[in-house]
Image (cartoon, rainbow, N blue to C red):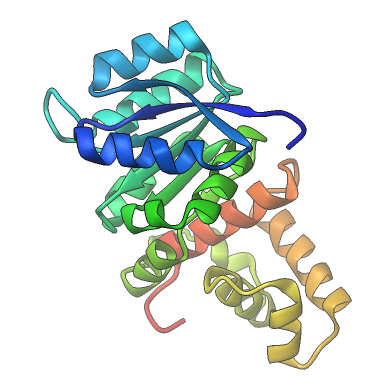
Length: 226
């Protein structure tokens, strides 16, 4: 990033909030411009400070349910260029679908254990601030383990070869790693990915967002063992 990113941190536990703040401020590319501890304050501070990104918990006062997700949708509606990184102790797919129900651009979902890995946390903030998307690999794996098919799945349009590529994308593999596993060229994998993007109706999004969107469709629609 060419400039120091301005981040708002929303966390109701004081020690976690202060510890995370110090970790973020130890990195030269980020600056914590404000903090919040509940639903109302995160909205008020975001409107006042207009940060590049908001890093926040899912469960906050007053109800400790999905205040973070609800606030994220309000923020995105009012300030669409503000990135959101959601930190959660929960791997439940319901939270992921609820967060990303209105699109994936500018959203990140990380497990709270990632707070200790400041480099990964900073990369996630930078990615969503730039309009990209981030999903924690651990959470993706949990979603893979609990996926189920729905009637009229868009995956029905994909060939077995394209489904195989998509399955490996969901496992977090790069194009080069997929090519190596399938004994084909990287160019072949890139062609298959472009075709499956088109079949899933993702041809108009940036590449990273299309990749995340395709993985989400796979996790939501495919049956266990596919």
